[in-house]
Length: 61
Image (cartoon, rainbow, N blue to C red; front, side, top):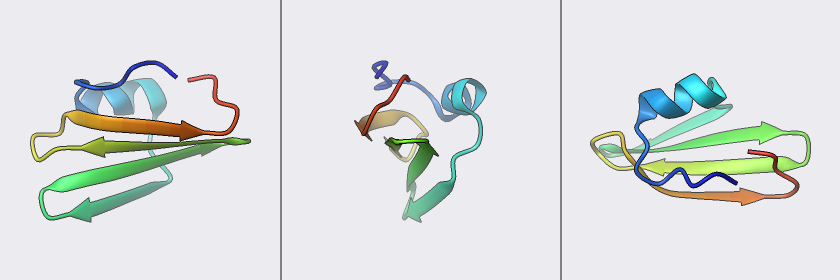
């Protein structure tokens, strides 16, 4: 998986499209993507910058 840390929300949306789930926790967000056997979770801070991302399964991202 490409290193997403430090990317902004608009960069993620432009490159990967709309997530299947968006979860808000106070000012932070978690976006989830799923494609085939691949699941990706992306965690944003309050400024919309990726702090952490993890993938599971066979991902081509």
